[in-house]
Length: 155
Image (cartoon, rainbow, N blue to C red; front, side, top):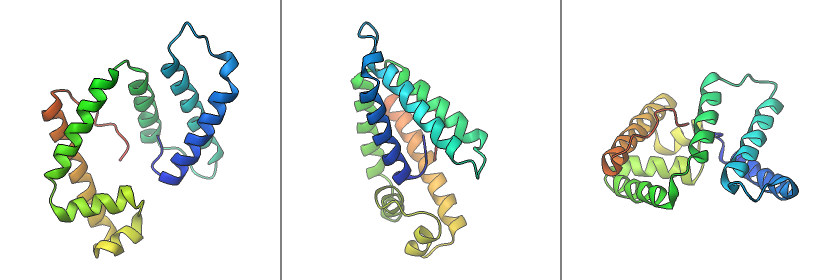
């Protein structure tokens, strides 16, 4: 729901604290996951409100709603595991240079100028390459699983 790994970790912790603090309001006759995901969406909404110095783009709001709806769906563990297997398969087919770029971005959490500098490319080139690789991965996963992933996922 947010692009910044550190912010995501903080928001996850805030969500857990809020879930634990709200346990008395949980109705055991209802599903836990949609309830917990609703709390997570509210935590993220408050996060964006706190960032009053910058305006939240419509794309971020769309991504937030998409992810919230996706998490509320009862897809079952099998569907998630199928997508994880497909992702592993598809990542193995990404050339080593682009796989390194993905690792630097998503495992090392490098961004912007630092990421571009580490691979000796311009920031614009890095953005373009990452966009293309993510799209190729999405298409590959869709072919492997037979189900369409939304193009609205945060990049």
